[in-house]
Length: 443
Image (cartoon, rainbow, N blue to C red):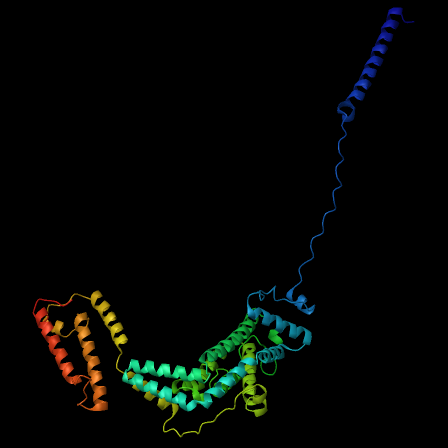
């Protein structure tokens, strides 16, 4: 049996253990109290996290958009609200998608539609050609008088003829500004279509590489047989001959203009268009053919009456003794022999003065000073004298040609005597100023 003290000790140990366990459990309960019990505050619950968004679907390719019948001008950088060519591209794309026709037919159809919408331009051109044909004799007379006055170097007479021509054109209601408007309108239409198609070719618009026909199946490359450039050049020469695009016919052109428009321009067009893509050549050929159709239609009296176009007066043809090329060469030689005007002499004098001022100093050698045209130019003063002498000499030649040596001015003083007096005064001035003395220089 256990003694009393041992039993008491054991009971005390058990009591202590029970008390410690109770204290431990109470401590655990105190530590697990909520914030609401201490601060009277309830924490907000966290919001629901949304599901992760799905990635966007991959962008469709240009080919897929074309197959779906959607416009791809914006994706290819072919759309600008301020460019007229952008609207023409929209028309091309719309015709191709809705009419379901190949690209070469689309280009031709759009060209025909635009030219029909702007039919007022060739109508105005034909009206101007008809009015000028009625007064061709008077206009040719003005042109001849101006040419003669220019050859004589008579600026006052040229201005007088210009005023007479202006009054005549005004009285007959012939406004040359309309011709400028016609050229500007045709140029604007051509530039709009040209740049619209060229940009589509440059970016290789889907379908252009297979949208051709016959031998030009690829509209993005040049014609390997040069057939379309040749057709473009020939038709352009015919268009300039009938004058449907410029407001003037070939008979109303000057020899130089007629040579350039009918012969030089087609050669240039052939050389340039041979480097263009066939898509551009298709447009060019279609536009020229439409112009020729207009020219043929406007020869019909019923159509001219419908559009209020005056009848075209055909002047009797005069058999020319020389060809157009010979006329141009003769005109060029005549222009070379025209004496310089005072304005040209003034400009030449100014250039020589600048050249003399920037050149080397004048040599003290009397021969170098006395002959100022030996390189480099020494003296602007002597140059002025030489230019004046040349001008007066040309005046004497023309007056002698028209009136002989006995020609006199209003005061009875002959041109030759006046020339001799001027040179006498010039020589006296040179002697006084010391131009002919050694060691001095002329400035």
